[in-house]
Length: 96
Image (cartoon, rainbow, N blue to C red):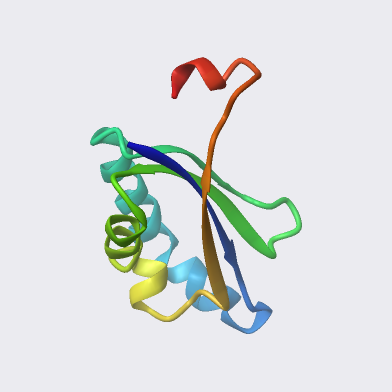
């Protein structure tokens, strides 16, 4: 499996709706983590977005997975991007 770094960017105009959907979003993330596909996730401190690390067979599989995120379903992402990532050093690298 490949590790992907996914960046979500938010628009300030969707903040209230994101607050309403956040419990569903985090529930979805928890279910993905239980399957071993989500390695880590969390929002940026300034509220402009989030960084998520996933494991997936390929980019197409990742895209299918990300389309199920309630934030994506509700149109609450200003943009998102994903790039295959190859962790080679640091304490987390040995876990991949």
